[in-house]
Amino acid sequence: MTACVQLHEVAFAYRPDLPVLKGISLAVETGVFLAVIGPNGAGKSTLIRLLAGLLRPQSGTICIEGADIRSYGQRQLATKVALVQQEFIPAFGFSVSETVLMARTPHFSQSGFERQEDRRIVADALAMTDTAAFASRPLADLSGGERQRVFIARALAQDTPILLLDEPTSFLDLKHQVAMYDLLKSVQRERGRTIIAITHDINLAAQYCDQALLLQPCSAAPGTGGTDPSCEPVGQYRTGTTSEVLSREAIENVFGVRVFLTRVGIENVLLPLGKMAKDADRAVSR
Amino acid sequence: MREDERVHSLLSPRTLLTRTVAAVALLVAIMILCSLVGTQNVSLRAALAGPGSPTAPNPDYEILLHVRIPRIILAAIVGAALAGAGAVFQAVLRNPLADPYILGVSSGAGLGAMLAVVSGVHWTLWGRSPIAVFAFIGALGTVWLVWTIGRITGRFHVTGLLLAGVVVNAFFSAIIMFLTSIARSQDVYATVFWLMGNMAEEDPFVLWASAGCVAAGLVGLFFISAPLNVISFGQTDAQSMGIHVERVQFIALAVSSLITAVAVSLSGLIGFVGLIVPHAVRLVLGPDHRQLLPLSSVMGAVFLVVADTIARRVVAPAQLPVGVITAMIGGPFFLILLMRYNRRVYWLS
Image (tube, rainbow over all chains, first blue to last red):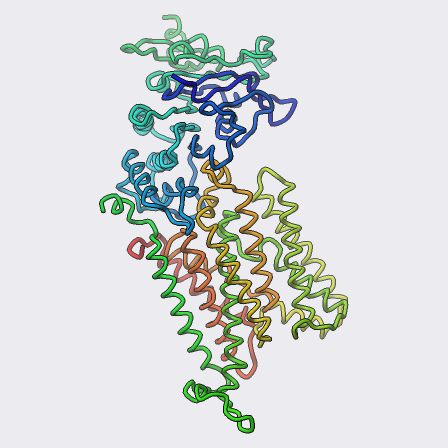
């Protein structure tokens, strides 16, 4: 197994006095499904943007498939890494197949049209994501779940070894959340893609992902509201297999909420408990 | 082929070629038809007889060749430039309300024209008044200014550009109004009438040079139309799909501003063409810029040739500014299209 994505001491700040990521080191091996978890403001999206080459780290190095990310041109990087952002509707009424085809744009012939190969890849991506049935409908006419699958299809059509997803399930109902994870899992298994996905659903991550990265905001320690000295200079993240990282203590510590742990089958299930939740005290004392 | 069936809604080069050829044929037919309409009745058959002898010139030939046809070609150039540029501006700025004037071309041209009048320069260039030359320089200079300001605002590039365009437009409009209020009235009238959008007979050299410039620009824009599709999904998406966003944006805005400036210096400010023609084509044929760009250009030419013919004819022998007609005809026509094709129409694709 080779490290497909490797971060060494990566630090990033939008403003010098406000570090977002500090001293992150991480190795993601080929074909691994990694969940990125953490509170709002912990730098999850920033990390994804760094990996997509949209931002440059102020210090540290990022390696994609063995080469420094800075050594890739934009076009070259787009053949390694595909990005699915949080869902949105574009300004003009492009259809599903037009949208998916756009991932092939850098490969078009001189005349600005797709080659046969591009059409084959698009058809394959549509079939894989179950979006072929509404390929000619405009994006705006689709439901949130359907539209998100189209963006997955577009990322697949980019034909990259690495897929980055920024909260792929955030606007989806329960059924579509599960369907999305099933789809991502099948992409990982059948296509051998490395997947790095931001998620807020700890339990789905535990069920589907191999590894997890738990990020903690840099300055404020959870619960206390003050500065946590243990956060300096590193240590504001945990990484490992999902069962190692997503422990009850870690989640309680990072998110600053009480968590109820139970076991269903082979899976740990973590249930967050607010102060006002019904049976909150009884559940925890159990 | 099964795979092709699955992605059947995609534009094929053959479809694009067929549609473009059909649109060009329509344009040529309309141009011929419109050249026969005017204050004087002209017979095509009589005109085809040739120029006649020097002592007895053929009036039909003279009118057609030296009056009507240059003006119709002019209208076609301006219409093609404005509609093509409008489609590009809408894509780059990701804004359906964008038109070729949004980044300051209009106020820049206006200011240039006003300065030409106020400063009282009287030289001519290829038979053109200094107004047109000043307007051309003013238009390009303003877009350059807006682009520079937009770059400085940085991260939210498109929003920065739009805001800079709006503010610069407002600022220059104020200067135009100031100059208007201190200038002599007949000069002001000439400038205002010119700015309203007007077609006049042009020197053949100017006509062909402009046609070449606009045609080259439109062909150049076609080659970035596939990246424009991606950019209309936003800069981040485009960048992550391997598009050089800044480069494409710069080429798109520079080329479309250039052909807009050419159009403005030929005919003043003709509103509406650059806004509604791309929308009309998009409503009927879909948003793919590889098709939108060439077909908007040809249909923009058709639209402006027809509008100018009406402007020549409707209050003959007086003439209306063509901008009046484009808005009066274009508006209702566009609303009908909007109501009829409120969704994308698949059976046409």
